[in-house]
Image 1: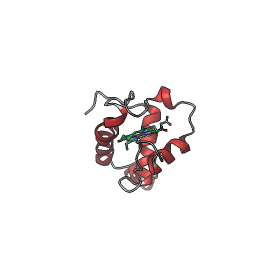
Image 2: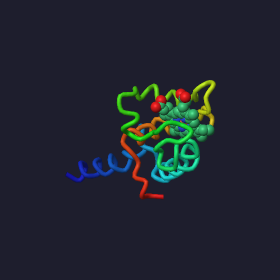
Image 3: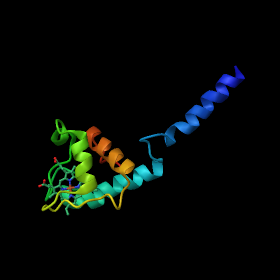
Length: 108
Ligand code: HEC
């Protein structure tokens, strides 16, 4: 019984560091980066500006891998720059997931 709960506790403690989940503080940083840096072209609420809308309804139907590659490498001959030097691939995948889910802009 004690053994089991210790294991469960350890499992829960290590869970957030696995795979696609980034530390909460980094998640907050990335969301504000998205708003400030990506938002300067895609609009503060990502509704579109110089760059197209990045809202879930605009991304639905577009392959996730294509969107990840766009953020990693940019789009040649357009204003969309590559971000792979600045953000890690895991961070870009995480951001892409947030875009498809939709971001609550009520939070800073
Ligand atoms: C300097 C302006 C600029 C900045 C900054 C910028 N983008 Fe873009 N982005 C663009 C433009 C312009 C396009 C459209 C390129 C084209 O014509 O295909 C684009 C396209 C995209 C696309 C493809 C959308 C689609 O529907 O195919 C994604 C995804 C994207 N940007 C994400 C981001 C993210 C995430 C950031 C911040 C890390 C960012 N962009 C920052 C200008 C920008």
